[in-house]
Length: 291
Image 1 (cartoon, rainbow, N blue to C red):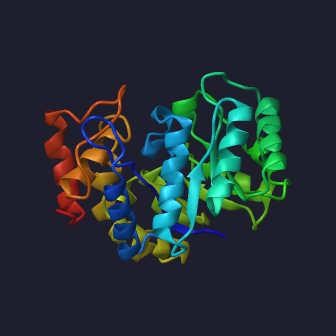
Image 2: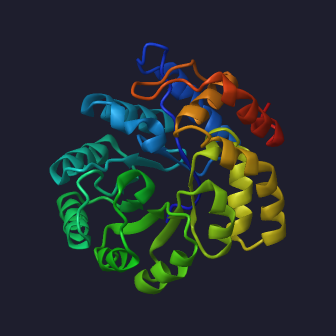
């Protein structure tokens, strides 16, 4: 089971939107040195929605190659078309990833039965560990615990990234899915408490900026060391808030660029962070002692 601080990696770009492979390699080395437990390539934070299929898989393959087996790599392969999700998941398997992360179909608002059939079809088509991803604030689609419970009976569906921030769902999902099913949070602000209550880790945005601290906090929380975990999380609280001052990944890309790890680049329809937000993000970075 993959657990710990799982960083939803930003995709470095030049100011014209072209992908910067050299900076991508630099980021991979940075995370390995800082103790990150696993990486997600081409998740929401990686701007998967604005890359074409060839670019998407090129980034995934590059991350796998740069990591060279030193930590697990998870590929974001979700889509609002079941056939497209199958294609991406198969390509990710061939690229050598350890698991795939599949967001609920966005925009078309499937029923709970539609969600079940969507994920069942992908799992049956591609024999690789698959992690469900529920983020209704972005997709307008909430996968209910009961549906997750049904899907947990499929052998290669191994966990869920639950990004609602609703901590009451932890026990609901655990009761329905059993102890072998991995529970990850996608909500940095509640990640400490999520792991203290039995979660296996956080698929984190804040970990892009303060990977060592996030790793230490999540590791302590998984072990049940509340006082120590909460003390570290207090220093991360500014990042958890300010990295969402504008739409993710706008602030986190600005912060990673501020750290000198990549150039100022993002793709439309997202734009570079506005200057009035800079002081708040800078203060949060100083609080976490990364500036």
